Structure formats: structure tokens, C-alpha cells
Length: 236
Image (cartoon, rainbow, N blue to C red; front, side):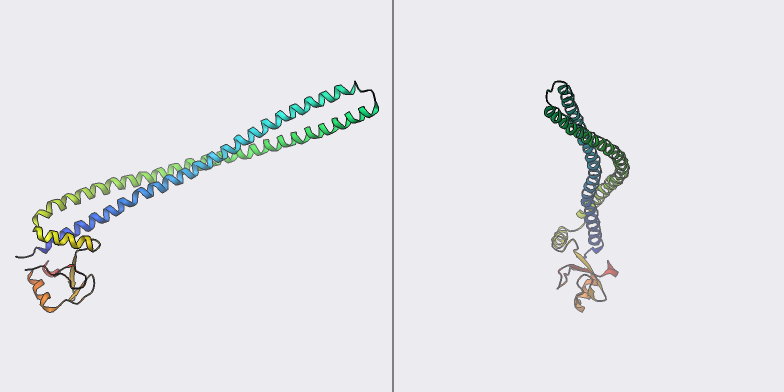
């Protein structure tokens, strides 16, 4: 029985292309995940700067509350000045008033410092929001390209699979079974053309008798070294 190597070669081409397309498809989800991670990183920067602002505002409220309490204590000390009866008590109160004023001054300096920090943080929030917006726009476009590519590849794989489905019944089942067995065991390459009397895949020299029989296409011969199906390209 003549071996129709053209159909076997076409089957190999279809399987090779299907495998190639499938590998591309497998790589798309990780690329999309990477893009999502980059967007999340930019988002986290925005979140972090907003948290800094919230901490700043909380600190200011605490300082302002403390200033209020200390000023009330100051008023209390000043009222007591009119009630003391000895110079020693008067001196002690003046000392308390002085220390309290120093405390107020220090707290108010801290409040001013926090207000200045708030201005810086506000600028950081604006910048991080802008960078996030730019990154989101850029990465969204990249995702859109990848999703479009995914759709195209899925359609291409479906078309190739249909072509394979239509081709396979036209090849004798024993040849298809042999092809599939080698295909699965040899990293997806079941056929090897003979080039300059050598197997193209493993470079093993082919015996002259086998070469002559390959040209006649009467029987399938496997490479004695790599086990792939040999074929004479000029007659394929």
C-alpha cells in the first residue's frame, strides 16, 4: 500500500501549529496577571499615601485636643495666683505656668509641623493618583491587546483543530495511531525528512536500502536512532 506522506506531513504541520498556538494561549493569563499586579502596585501606593494623610489628621486632632487640655490647666493655674497666700506658693505656681506654656508652645510647634507634612502628603496623593491613572490607562490597553490576541488565537486553534478533524479520517488508522504514539513520545515531532541521506532530526545516516524504499513510499520506516517516521522530501 502506498503511503500518502503528504497527508501525514499535513497532519504534523497542523499539530505543530496547534501546539504553538496553545503555548501562546497558555502564556496569556500569566501576562494578564502580571499586568493586574502592576496596577495593584500603583493602587497600593495611592492607598498608602491616603493612609499617611489619615494618620496625619489623627495626630493633629490628638495634639489639638492636648493643647486644649493644657490651656485649660494654664487657666486654672492663673486663677490660683489670686488665691495663694505665700510667696513660695506663688513662685511654685509661676513655675507651673511657665512649664505649661512651654508645653503649649511645643505642642503648637508639632501641630504646625504636622500641617506642613499634610501639605507634602497632599502633593504625594495627587502625584500617586496621577501615576495610577496613567498606569491604569496604559495597562488596560495592554490587557485589551492581550485579550484580543487570545480571542484570535482561540479562533485559529479551533480552525486548525477542525482541519485536523477533517484530515484524520483520510489517513489509515494504523498510520494515525503510529503517528500519534511517536508524536506524544517525541515532543510533538513524529516525522523527520531525510536530508543528504541523514535523518534531519537526529542526524543518523540512513541505510541505502531504506533510502530506496522510502523513495517508493510503499512502507513506513522509522529512524533506527530517534524512532521518528522517515520520509523522502522530494516524493512527499
